[in-house]
Amino acid sequence: MPALRTPLIAPSILSANFAKMGEEIEAIDKQGADWVHLDVMDGHFVPNLTFGPPFLKSLRPYSKLPFDVHLMISPVDLFIEPFVKAGADHITFHIEAGPHAHRTLQTIKSFGIKSGIVLCPATPPEAISQVLDMVDIILVMTVNPGFGGQAFLHSQLPKIRKLRQMVDATGRDIRISVDGGITKETAPLVVDAGADVLIAGTSVYGQENYKNAMDALRYQK
Ligand code: DX5
Ligand code: ZN
Image 1 (spheres, rainbow, N blue to C red):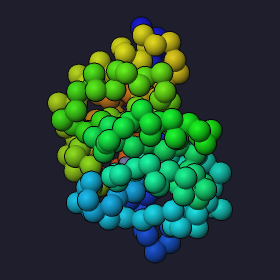
Image 2: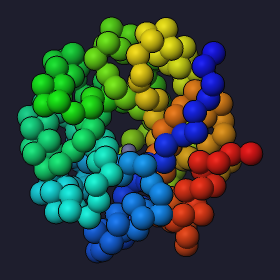
Image 3: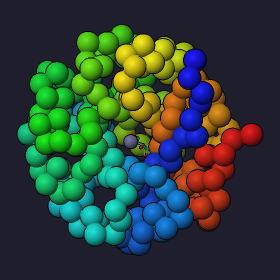
């Protein structure tokens, strides 16, 4: 098995102060974040609403870090180009959002950005076995999508392990990111299972000192 990598840290702005989002993004950039995670919700695929491409565009000047855009919307395809134009570096979408994940991946890749696919807690790892040649990022939800601050679902750990095996078998450099309930207690569990990107809202933006919070997730005992 390949050596475990130090995980990348992707703070989720869902838990930041929306009234001063530019400064919130500058702060995590200066304090060592690797990616900025932006949660897009449509009130249909998930029971919550957030923001669209204009908000992303307005934030783009505040950081050169990759904007990791997590689309919790259905349908997906119509919105890919607007998010690319607004400054997305990665677009991840849910395999459950339908109808044609392969076509959606083709569309994302046609813009030359990184493509990602997300699995909800009830979705088995095999659901994405036929598109592993097209993904750069696999995002495992360790809560049900829609809200920050939920409790980590330990039932997802075997799925992360299985996906790590599937990824290693491809020989491709695919990141496995984990989203939901990531804390300094759960981070070592997901990294041990094979995750190499930690998405965290409450555990970064809910803390006083963002640098210490990110270091606590990244450097595990
Ligand atoms: C939930 C979002 C997450 C959320 C995580 O649907 O995808 O990115 O911000 O929040 P925490 O880290 O608080 O569980
Ligand atoms: Zn997310």
